[in-house]
Amino acid sequence: MAEQRILDCIKTPADLHLLTESELGILADEIRQQIIDTTSKTGGHVASSLGAVEIILACHSLLDEPNDKLIFDVGHQSYAHKLVTGRLDKFDTLRTYHGLSGFPRPSESPYDAHPSGHASDSLSVASGFAKAKLMRKTDEKIVAIIGDASLAGGMAFEALNYIGTEQLPMVIILNDNEMSISRNVGALMKHFGNIRANNAYRNTREIMQEKLESGGWFSNAFAEFGKRTKDSMKHMFLPESMIYEQLGIVCTPPLDGHNIHELRAMLKLVLETDGPVLMHVVTKKGAGYEPAMADPERFHGVGPYDPKTGKSVASTASGISYTQAFGDALVQEAKCDNRVVAITAAMEGGTGLKEFHREFPDRFIDVGIAEEQAIGMASGMAAAGMKPVVAVYSTFMQRAIDQMIVDVALPELDVVFALDRAGVVGSDGPTHHGVFDIVYARMVPNMRVLVPSGANELASAVHTALAIGGPVAIRYPRGKDASCTKPDKPELLDVGKAIVRREGSDIAILAFGRMVEVGISAADLLEKAGISARVVDMRWAKPLDADAIAKAAKTKLIVTIEEGVINGGAGEAVLDELSALELYAPALVMGIPDSFVMQGNAELLLSEIGLDAEGVSSAIKAKLARL
Image 1 (cartoon, rainbow, N blue to C red):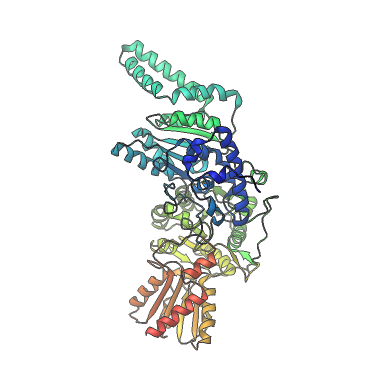
Image 2: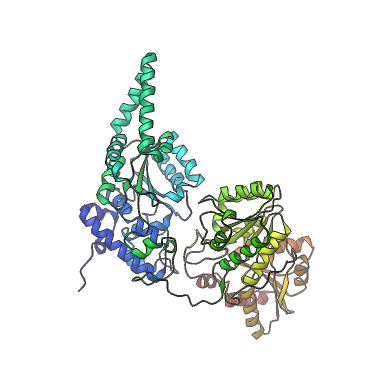
């Protein structure tokens, strides 16, 4: 009979209050093993979650949740949090269809304060909780855990400025997995940090400063001397803390993020302060699992793997991935034009730019988690005569729509937006599905939007976007194109022109992107029912092919299919075009409904919302029956 684990006895975070620090250490090991056992089957964000285990246990062992609030940034480091908040029995469903989300989700648990799927927003959310606490005169504790990469985002700095100005009572835990701890400085600075985080010290410091500054020239001079000496010591020992201190936020010295005793001791102290405190915690990504520590980038978001070796389970899918097809195409374009520059926001590998970086290190730019900076920078480079291509996930591009509009589209600059992970992405769920890009790109004047249906078309789309100039967005999905192993030589696509992929006379299916393949399969099913369907690869979501739409209006039914939201999408644009052409035809608009799509296998999700061949053919037959 297997020995019962401490983890098996944890039903709520309150149970952690009963454990000794030694038992918390044992629990940390059990949690790591559980994370490895589960994610080796489901895949997931392994390195970050393994690195944050002790931080999460320290927080839960001292907080009174769900009254107190624990906010993550980003939520992919929250697996230990899920395991100690009553979700152990469902943890094997992590990131699966109708299973547990890979991120915090308030609808899933009262212990999830915020659906943290995008970086750099935790401090703003936490400041809202802290401000509400002051207004309501309540006593809950507010803690935000933010990664060092997330802290580089502009939204985080905007929040820090407000938090410091308002002196909001909250704790910011900086999960820093890049910096090493200097043992020579640690003990002395730990002592300084304990003093500075103490309320009595904060109050005494402010009273003394006021008295000295009001006591004449000598007192003023002495106060200034003391301030300069203090700042010099901080610069010597804690240079990274100065920016926070100058914003009005007390900063602790670096703490060992895998030492439960050290974390609890400091957290217990700072939770009692009446102003903002930043706990600087140093961790190791993948801690406790050698393969993840050796290759944290791969284990940031990894598919199923062998838990003993860490080697990924080979995918059975054939063909080239859209991401690789884009990356290869961009390298070829850059070889022919030295003005081509690649810009990404902390997603070099995810957007397929590693080869570009190797080939053209001087023309590769990674701005960190700062999409606004990426687009703003691209506009400046374009104005200076370069040809920037911004490779970014569709969902993350949402953060820089203002820059797309004002900095790029208004002056009509030559910037290409390569929107990876467009459509349903699968296991990462609603915060990562790229279903809004057709809408936000189409709505912008001067913008043209390419929607290639396969890897060959994607290579041609990259070539075309760079050739025609002006702002152009290219959207393409996650996954592989099974029909292609290596794209052909790219062609220059006619702007706003579609191509017929299958002839038919009864109805016309106008499909966008990889929905072309779905449309063809649906047409095959309809043919068995005696319905002849033409399938048109629209290629462009803007401008639309008016001739193809006019021809479609001559059939019994126009069907549009897109892997994006219906509201404001390409299908509705087709209806607008019909109106502009003063044509009438029955129409069926298919796409993502007006609700958020949860996580799970992409094929299952598309089937659930009716965007597979069976769903499309059934909807068409039902529509025809009603006509």
